Length: 231
Image (cartoon, rainbow, N blue to C red; front, side):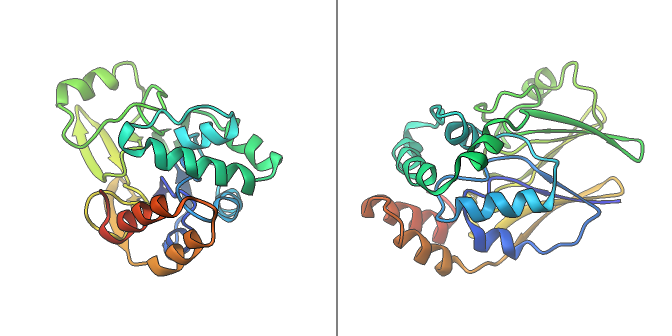
């Protein structure tokens, strides 16, 4: 069995379309929208690809008209993106995003999987970066019944093994922040996990941003993030 795991698409259609890996099952770990110019197309594409989707903090912000819970570093970008995204999405799509589960437990071919955006317990705002200690991860995984745990949110890919549990962050499809400006995703295949990267048409996404009503100084910041893989 082969599983494709995507996360943090952030309205970047060119990046999403570049992930063409074939798989038996697809998992999406949330943050389909915000920051990018094509929230509607990305939401439609994900809905056509899979039902295995959990809610990210930006999906929550748009779908439930909530604060994104972002750090100060990204707050202005997020708020401006939310205004554009809200105007771009019909009510039905917002309802879809706002009503996604915060965690999803699946058993496939005898393997137990947990999907979540931020933390294994379903905190959509919690950042668990690759440098988090084993002790904290052990606390996060307490009472979690899964062989493999998939989380997103940080935009930083990671594979950790703790006491028989594999924790995977596939990184970000649409806005990687680890210095590699390529769409990032993960593939789980018969118990083996690999982080993969693929080039996409960054300039097409930039052109789309320039056609939005996001303030120009913020578009410049978003362009820098896309071209450099973070800020």
